Each structure stands twice: as structure tokens, then as C-alpha cells.
Length: 179
Image 1: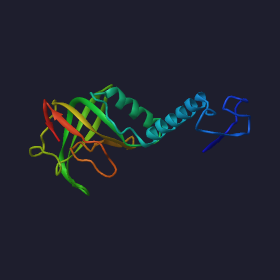
Image 2 (image 1 turned 90 degrees about the vertical axis):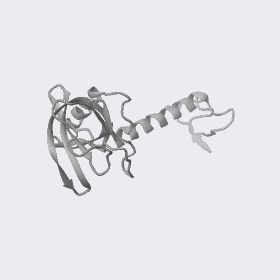
Image 3 (image 1 turned 90 degrees about the horizontal axis):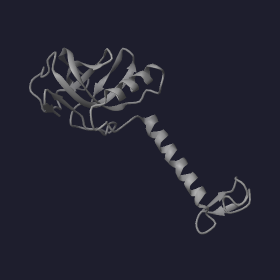
């Protein structure tokens, strides 16, 4: 395998325009470092474009609020893994959607922001809905979706993963965890 030298003569083991070997003594360690840095940067950029698929290990409402603000300002709308905590401000009745029975509640995460939490009742190991009430302290791991400022929320709050979402979620209500 060869690399075309486009830097100053000698900096990549040959003259400008030469093709140099990527193996052996002609392969300059500085070029290796630059190529590895470029590959790492492109990988990080690709991961950012595809969304964050690892939630914070602890509740991080600041990260969520920053992600929400970025989407509001026009950032590419990719699904993000979020780890939130806060107080339940409203609970909605369960309803049947195209993917089964779901329960909905709204979680205050600070700075005057509340977010809709969607729980797949068919997949969660939890008592009959509603198992949250206004005023409960809740911690959630799930997928943040942002379709528009009026259509956003956290779903995939259950233990399962799927072809399009690799992160297991959960909801902890006043110390009791439901997956």
C-alpha cells in the first residue's frame, strides 16, 4: 500500500509527488499520527451525525437541555441517548399506538422545561398504568427524538433494544425501577 507525498520533501519519507510505502522505515511517524488523528476525527464526526448512542452514566439534564437547544437552532435531528431526572408535572392516560399500549407523563428537567416521557407498557415490567403520579421523583434513560419543537420526547424507556436503537432504557420512580 502506498501514500502520495503532498507535504514538504522528506516529511513523508519521499519527495513531493512520490508514492511512499506505509510499511517500513519510509513511513514517517508524524504522518501516522496525522492519519490516525484524521480517522479519529471522522469517526467522532460520524458518531455525532448519527446521534449519541451512549447515555451519561448519571442524570445529565444539562446535556439534554444542550441537545434540545441545538435541535431548536437547526442542528441535524438525530436520536440521542439521554439520562434525565426530575419531577413529574403531569400524567396522561395510556393509549394504543401503532406499536402497542403506551403511557405518557411529563417530566420537569429544570430551566422551565418539561419533556414528554413515553413508556411502552407492553414491554415494561411494571404495574398497571399509571405507575407515576404528579410530584414523583423520576430518573429516565431513553431515546430523545426531536421531530419539531412541538413533537419531541423520550421513548425506548424499556429494557429492550431494536435494530434501530441499541440502548436499554429504564424509568425509576421514587426509587423503584421499571424496565
